[in-house]
Length: 139
Image (cartoon, rainbow, N blue to C red; front, top):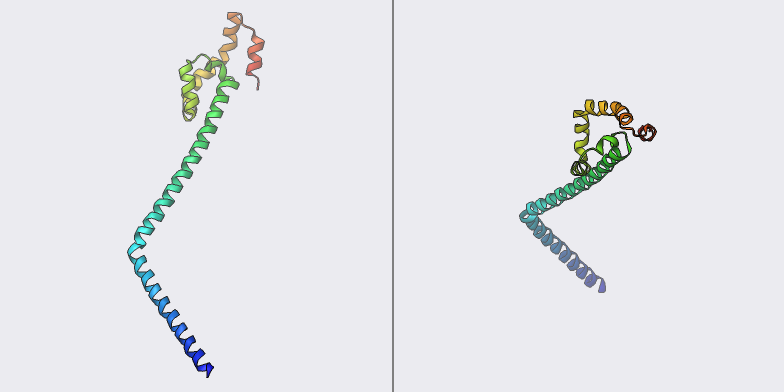
């Protein structure tokens, strides 16, 4: 006697579960059909923003590294002897915008080379100590 009651209750439970599942799936399908494109647009927008932030971070790292290299080039290489004759404003600008340094060096390569070759002679004429300058030029 109890077996038919348990079986009927079990069938009711299965039927209710299937019915609720079907209604839920249709409701979800309808919602996604209406809201899906908006959801996809938001997802793409979020991904685009993340990509832009990543590029910005990479750009900051590259600019910082370039700025540090430019500063080192202008302070610790033979180029530093010529850079000290530039105005403070120009030196600061070159340090803030290191991406311009290769182009400038290429544009003025002949002048820089000549100045580095002539510098010891000018210093000897001016009576400056040649040894100090030579030590600065040695790598």
